Image 1 (cartoon, rainbow, N blue to C red):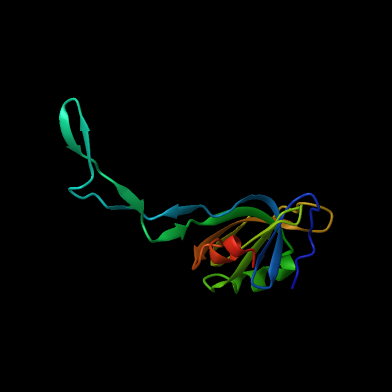
Image 2 (cartoon, helix red, strand yellow):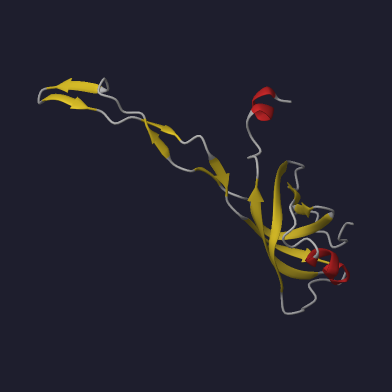
Length: 147
């Protein structure tokens, strides 16, 4: 199903088969989970004060995505379908106005409707949502090979 409220100047956010129009959006962050010490006794530098052992590091083999959040417009008729998404892992796609997309897997962690005020003439309502990211970061082999 597609929520009919649209703002053609903004992005859309699709979770499973529900598409929202966004008022504002914060895509998920990406970070490594730390660093691994690769120092050894052969990592040294000699200077005027003597020999110093140098600490060397590489990024952790693990990376993780943070949560995404958005203020969205939705059709109140679809509230039951939206509630059914909470806690269920689905594909998530953010599509910006220029057609660029970001796809990842996640679940709707929270859906907080505003006070019931109608936003526009179509009857669209607004809500704040949080999406927890899970699984692969949308970069890597596919991005590197162009596949």
